[in-house]
Length: 560
Image (cartoon, rainbow, N blue to C red; front, side):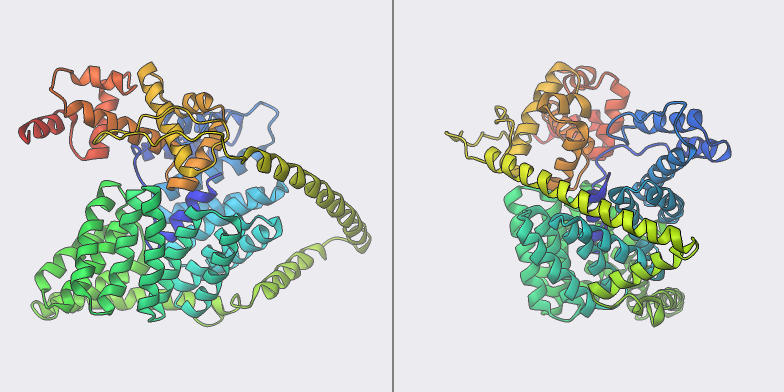
């Protein structure tokens, strides 16, 4: 599933969307396949739906059902992936609608991990829509499931989700409680990449609490981790994140420098949501310096992005900024933005105040008790004898599963401990050519660090491009891991899908070849980057760099 990607998407409501390095699927065609399934649900329509998703490489591997597949399974899979698709397209209304339809079928499978994935997706969509009333129970149930798993990485993920919920709902004190708990749990897990994300959330929440220097400290901690891992797009997010606190501290030049460094990186990565937030921050900084016209320009750049994403939380700040800037020079126009801002704030207040969210602000034990009460209320529909029998069977089954799980965990820990022994010799760091991915020899099968793993992936992708076949499954096969394992590992390190990461390496090679002496044609360069269709290569290149391969090569040669 896409839990780690959804996790980062949530943090990016503090900045969020994922890194859009892949071409955008055809939404109209997707809607046709989905509509066909909704009108006549069955194996044929479901397989056609997933055949299209696979053709767009939206799924890691083909999903296909046999004629014996139950209709409930088909609904759960189609509607869940429909919600994934709409969330990826930033269509939060449809994402929430289909995740809500899939949830009962996810629960029916008795797979808690599947239910947790669906709840995580649903929480993201509700938060983006400013619907905290519905986001709160989803986030708390998600934390229940993750806490019950005993997995510190999953627990820290859902704690961050809760923190983001309460921070955006205007309750930063409660959010700070959750994020500190998440940081402590994450330190136990030893996942530095996730720790960076949690530090970033802590910086946002500290800013909301007016603890500006503490916010700067947390953002710097996150940035240090990201810089060590060499993820430029995440460093840009941290730079945008630190700017509001620097502004509040009166360090305007530092804030402006951070934003001007961050914004081109965010835009180039396709992270429009984070870019729009940075535009809001730049607008506010310019307002303080009475540069109204320039502030209006940045606010107007952010506005259509938030409107298209139905992000009323951040749009309200854009509208407020436009009002503050315009009232000095065009008062009548300013009033329109003020009215829109008030309307948005009223909507947010209605969804976050009083009993709508306050009922979920208890500590973890109280949250669990509420869930148990809901489950008990459902069980009363059955007769007393069935309840007693079910409880006895469940208790025995839970004991048995717990014992088996503990045995498996001990074995797994022993295997990991043995596999993590340091190699006898270390290899020197590979040299990196300007604009090219590093060339490395494959490390041992058990990769001890994230950096080594990425180096290994880079080398395999380079070889795959030379062989002319560079899809996710081929790369995973060369790495001797499954496509889903490759996807999870890439997501945990870069917050990007495996397809997007591979495509970035292909585009990096393409740019290097285009900057060469010009002896190669576009068709030849496409083939060297494992594209069999020059048109597909040109579309991917333009989406990635914002210009066609020919234009890029022409500009590169002029600058020489």
